[in-house]
Length: 311
Image (cartoon, rainbow, N blue to C red):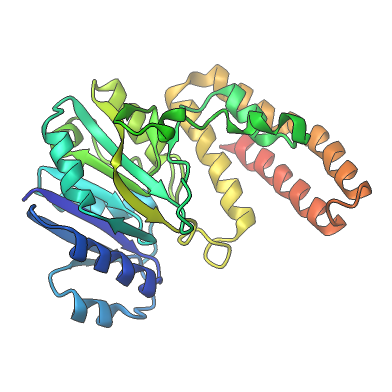
């Protein structure tokens, strides 16, 4: 078996169907299997999917699990030379899978590969990033005047603008190809780091780098990613989503960057509240934001500081 593809059903049957159709319509020349983890959904559309794609293998959870825990179930069963972690809200273009495997076959020091990712309008979606740092965290959590908004992009790597394969610190978890031999040495996705979602792709890529495997952005392979469908407000709540992200970031810092930098990160989350209050107040007085929006944003920042302090 060349490739095992792991998908999660998040009660998005239409999206999952479109994803599966793109996989089976565009993939040839390799021996592959597809697994879908039904994440304790209501079963809506599942029978239709099974009828159209009888070769797809299923794992059905009795209770909802996080991103890492769901995909790890498939990774433990995979017997292929490569595995692909794929979001259900993606569309595969061309022979993306075969192209990627062919590249990895001829570059034996590559452990992880990410494709070029497009938005639904065909524009480039950010998918290559620099490892988290205190500077990146600082500017990410601050409300900034337009003249300084470019500092919000410090975490984005310029690798995604290249037209040839290039190294990146980490790649977006919407689509990640992994060499099974490397996976055996590095280990599964970390379920403790991020019980629900976020930071598992960052952590995984860092562990592959630490083990001597390269992480590569491969623009010849292309997918479209809608984005945010498994963590959209109707599923998890936008406020809770942001709190979970920052909580996971604290755990990542503790795991990889040590106690001092973790403490400084928590301090950033706390100390940015007065600054953001002033900036939000200014936005309200200039009628750029409604009072309700300012209150909601400040409340979220306070929750982030509180939850992160206890993480």
